[in-house]
Length: 124
Image (cartoon, rainbow, N blue to C red):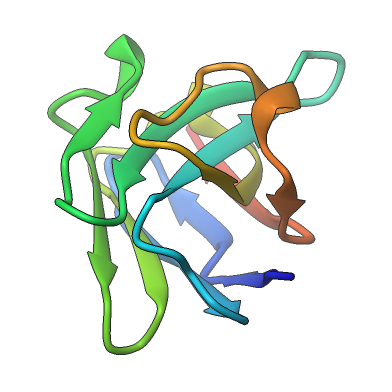
């Protein structure tokens, strides 16, 4: 069993930065992947970024490439999402998720464990 707790959301002006954290309790197995998803009002939950726990390989959706960076700290069992050059369209609730596997899935339904979410609001 894995529990995930996100933190770091907030209100920021366009062009600003935020760093989200996802602390995992329980055992993160070496063949696990971690993902960040987001969900805006009236929209489906969408994949933002993912990382393979064993080798640190990262994956991003096109709209955040070059602006967001996902990373992990094995010792702290924590995954981060550094978000720079934020845009109003990045406004959403951001969720951390965990799954078994070697490549992060793009479909939220494939993930077994979820955090409670953290609100990110970008003002124009």
